[in-house]
Image (tube, rainbow over all chains, first blue to last red; front, side):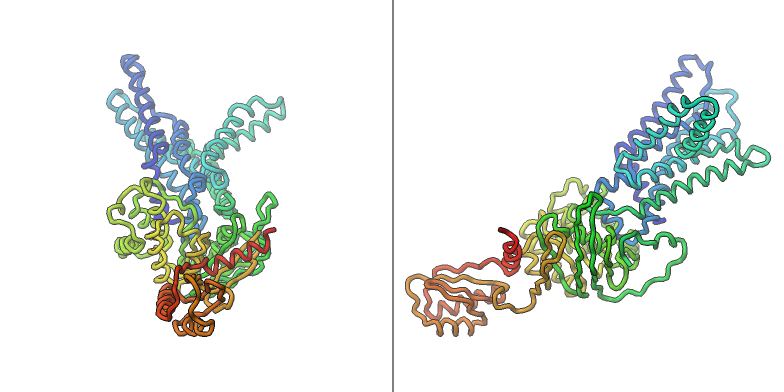
Length: 245
Length: 335
């Protein structure tokens, strides 16, 4: 992976309005909501750490600036004539997206923890915080792999649209499909699909279990690897030309 | 070999790749390349070109002739359906070739959040150049392409078309390339920039860099190119060697008209022209056409004709050799 390219894409995320403004908006809305609940219930309802899955919204917002965006803006031909392997380019995008999303997720988590500590006499244990934060990070890097994989062939925003469409199918369409035996197949397909759309490692269920749940760990790692390998494979076959755009 | 399918080089990316020795000057071999896009539209048909190391090679042709696609094949961005492309004996997407390749696309776009200096520094790092020399090389290049120092740290979104083109050229030169691909380099450049570009290309050429130019600006191509290929409907129709002398197509043709009757005999006229280092192409009742080497040659021959007593009324430069070459090729196909 090219460190120069990775750094440039990290920097880019903090300079563009959609990839800076949307995560910030999520950040403030989420924290303000918890403050509002606290005040309206006169400190009866104590705030909780946000479910890591909710951070998929931040990853989606950051995913707007991906390979499809580079292609649509015409940056690809020059970038790919540099001594940079296509696989390095894809991995650089994945690492940058995962890093920036993790930064927002961890920052949010730490602020939330501080907020909970200051308002609750009996806050959750530190392990809970760590499980939550690690869960956020694994979701960020997992979803980054999904969105980068989709963007290797689709134009700008196409990766977000495809993700949204597949999520709709997994969340709304598949649960209502079939009867008796076919329900089981629909359920299995749904689980596979959600595993690819929202790859997340639940640290509590994986590492607090005895013995350690290797199945969960390998499933997460294989899902992420599969998505990245697929993305690299598709991108290796992609032709890049102004004439063919 | 750069052929129809994507190169398998990515698949063994994990293994340490030994550095492929690369010759100091790079030529390009295009052998029987054909390419169609998905809709069945044939863009290149059995194109073969042999571009020598260190030469400046121009590609001309009407819009949609396949010039940019050919550039894509030579840069390893597009894969031919059949045929091969080799740069310095290696596939065009070999990392060693990319290390010494510079490319200015027709419509270069920039990372919007970067200034001109940051943009070049980014490409300097991507090209694998030494970090210690980055600041110095970036500034030297910005100066070399004629960018005003006041705009070096300005947002590229505020740049004019000409400034963007200059920055694009600097980007193409940042890796100190040994092979340079320029797609419409004069697009949007003012006359001063044009002269600057020409001088820059001459300088680059002297360093032994192979230059490939795709342009519609025939006059500029004629001034900088050693050879030119004429493209039509995805085929190479002709390759013209601009360095070779030609009786019918000359680098600069001068049309001289005189007032009243010609006091000089045809023999005397031919002798005066020849003594001035030019060639008489043909004579008419009130004019003659002379082939001259360059503007100085034109000045010399005009001085000699005036001195010999020819009442010169006007002297005009005819369209260039390349323009006539283009018209001949184009005209041959136009009903």
